[in-house]
Image (cartoon, rainbow, N blue to C red; front, side):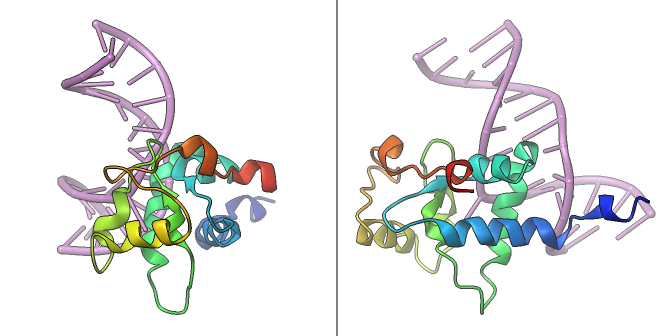
Length: 115
DNA sequence: GTGTTGACCCCAA
DNA sequence: TTTGGGGCCAACA
């Protein structure tokens, strides 16, 4: 009776994609928040890794709305252009100051509150 | 199969 | 206050 205890692997990614897809426009969330929402706060790094997998075509997710704990755009370097992520966030009404989200407490979206 | 890295976070000095 | 180190799990070489 331990077959159902191994519910992980792709499930983790599915959860990450699900939460990221639920991020409303003009709001941002953090890797840690997503990890905690999944019950894996210690695996916050996996969230970032999952987003890299989200780059796969066919998976249209607003991953640009996900930033680190400090609101820093750590993943902008993974975009086609370093300014692409910032431009997308500013296009949604989010102000970026020095590669960092301004008023993070205001635009912060907590998945735990929604889920 | 082993070793290293990574879109991170938390704690201690 | 700032700086340094540890942990955690999965993908990549």
